[in-house]
Every structure is written in C-alpha cells, then in structure tokens.
Image (cartoon, rainbow, N blue to C red; front, top):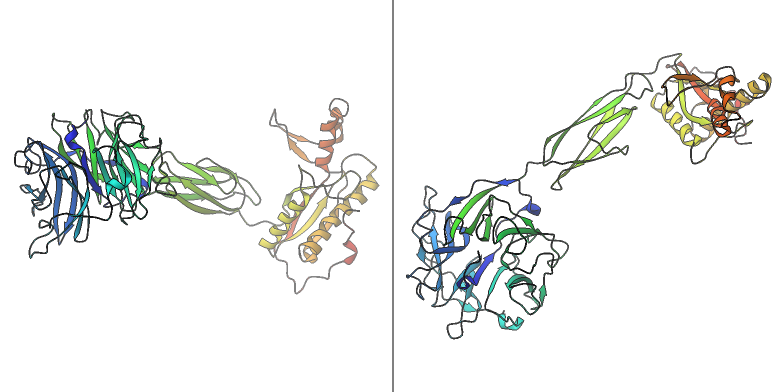
Length: 538
C-alpha cells in the first residue's frame, strides 16, 4: 500500500557507496528497538557518525508530541548506546515547525532540510547550522534558513516531493508530480548550478509513482521506491546504475525479497555496509528496519597447465578453476577459446580473461612446455606447400606457406642448438628423375627463405629431395583410420571427384624436417654451401 499524503515530504543525502551496486546479498532484516519505533509511523532514516557517536535521524508521524500535533511529521533523533542499542528518541526542536519536516544531507556543520512554509504549506529547502557545544554531536541545531535554491524556480505543481542531494552538492534528484510525469510522481534531476530540470525518462519512471530517491556517495547508484515496476509488494525499493552522465541510468533492479515485503517498502538509506529503510510489513504503521550488505566475493581464479607429452605434440591442456566470484562466467582465451578449459594445445603461452555475472574481471596466463627435441626425429613442418611442377610456395586463403615458414624459423630460434634436414616431396605424377630434382629445389627454396629472409644460420640446415617415394599420411574423417596418400589411392578420385584428387596430390607436395643435431657449434661448423641457394618463386 502507499503511504498517506502526510508522507509527502522527505529528504535523503548520499552517504557511503556501492561499487556499481554489486550486492551479493543481505543479512536478515532487523526491526529497530522500541526506543526508535513506536505506535506511530517512522520513515526516512538517516544515519550520521561524529566524534565516535552515531545518531539516527528519522521522521515520525501520528505522534501527539510532534510540534504540529499527531497529523504533523517531525524530525526525531536517537543516539546509539555503547552496547550498540538505540537510545530513547527525541524531537530535534530547532529544526521542526508546525508543518511537515524532514532532514537530509549533513555536510560538515550544516544540514539540508525540507521545511514547509507555515502560511501556505509550500515546500522549501533550507539549511540548518550546527551549534557547537561540548560533549554533543549533532543534536544542537540552529533554525533552518532559506537557501539560494528555491523550489518555486522549477515550477513544482504539487507539494508531493522528496529528494536527495549528490555528494558534491551539485545535483538534486527530485521526486514529484511534474507537468510531464508519466505517473503520480516521477524522478527528475536538478542541476543546482544552473537550476536546469531534467526528467529522468521511462528507464526509471513508470505510470505508477517513483519516490524516496537516494544517491550513493560516488553518485553512481540511485536507489528509489516504485509502485510501477512490480516486485514483492505494492511498493518496492530498486536501484539503478549511472551511465556517462547524471541523466543516464540503467534499467532498475529490485533489491530482493530480503529487503522488500508484501507491503510498502521505501526510503532506503545506506551508510557503509549497513542499510536502513521503512516498511509496514508487520502492521498498518511503518517502522524502521536495518540489514547488513553482504558484498560479492572477489573474482579469483587458478590456472594450471598440462605440458605437451612429445616434442611438437598437441596434447597440452590449460585447466581453469574459479575459486570465488559470482556465476555465471564468460571466458576469452588468447587462442579464441570460450570455454572454461582448453585442450589440444601446442607449446606456448596461453592467457585467459574471465568475467563474472556482476562484471568483475580478472586474467591469468600459463606456459605450456614440451620435451626437448631428440636427434633423428622427423617432424611435420606446418603447411609448407608448393604449386604443381614448381617450387613456388602456395599462399592463398587456405594455405599460407610463408606464415608456416616463420613458425619454423621461430622453432630454430627457440632451440639454437638444433640442426635440421629439410626434406621435400612431390606428388606421384611425373617421372622419378624429374621429381627428385623438383623436390630438391623445393627444399632449397625453404633453405633460401630461412637463411635470407629470417636470418637463420645456413650451416644448421641441409636441403634434401625425396621425390615421390614417401607419400604423406592423412586421417580419414569418417573412419578415423590413417591413410597413405599413394598414387593408387589418389587415383580413385580422379574421375569421381577431381577437386579432391588435386587436393590430395597437393598434400604430398610438402616439406618435413628431421633433427640431425641438438649441439650446433657455430665456431666449428663448416661454411655454408652457397650453391644451395635458389631463386624463390620462379
């Protein structure tokens, strides 16, 4: 249900902050003791701490002790005792008059208050100054005085207002029934330096009513109550996160069933990790409640790796474990992976960026190693291919031989003691003598590129031509069986599938490597045979 019209006047200030409102949860709500709550109604809590003393200001209505009687609303204050309980509340006489009053932001020795004009009951924002007195915190205040900011300057058509002041005192968020309101009351932003009034739009406003705004200390989170967004009861408390400017706010999020009830919940105040708010969940009159904010656990990850089992193998693994955070998580690996763990890894460094459900981000890297290479091990060089009847490298949208050769150069750089035989092959077409010559020239082309283009010591490389004698092996995608690409097998595709016939022949036109030494010594090696160089891409 909605509060009755004598709750029209309420003021909140910014105190404390929540980093992008990242709540993990709340403790069980606790109703404040009978020294604060009474048979009357209590709303608009506001906590302040000074000189180690905590004082809770709030509005009480239906109390015959109010300055204007039971139908008036006055500002009351309770001081916390040494044992943490709240002491007997008392009226703050200097600030109250016979009409409706509420206290909001306290900045140093001044307090922003809402103080209705006695003659026409028009709302006015005033400032009360603290009177210094030994042994007292904030209890002694002077009479509120008018400010340079006049509500009349923004043409408020109704006395139903509530507001919050930004921590830098440059902006005011106002709830009122304005000329362009979508519902009974909407939220507006007032620039206190220019007086400009801006409706906050339908991202936060509805055809219901939006009341009791409150800003975090960093002005990045706006709390308010709404009857038009659904939820647990007739009016729930929501929060919205600021965008680039004070007029841009995210879609509101319900504070949840721990805070909101089946009744009326509004007027949230936050200080540190404690919140106070007003609710009538246990009766027709509203009382003050409090709860602790449980902030989300930090996003912490553990990344371990399983190394490759053989030289130039691809059975490495990066194993990621989420130790804390808020699920679900998203993953972005340096190799393009998007799952928690990645498999079939070669030697290298792999990094991951993890983001959890509330936007926390962290990253980690792991180094995957491989065993040292061994002498006489034949290694398949990555996709170094040749055009038909040529030692011209294939470089197209499918195969990038130069990129593959750069990988070979990096391998030789990583292992400066390695010496390789560069063993090149042809397909099965053509005569043996011609294919032996062609394959040798292909090996010479690899030799030339690595020495002249990548700076590899040519004494570590020996080009070898192997002709068509050793066909490549591939894996059948259907059976999973290894298939040797000999001439008889490839010829089965010549008529039925000419494209596959040419593709398989090209797989055979390749260069492999064979490790001949892991102890290359540049001081004792023989000079490079310059006759091995060849013009690349004839």
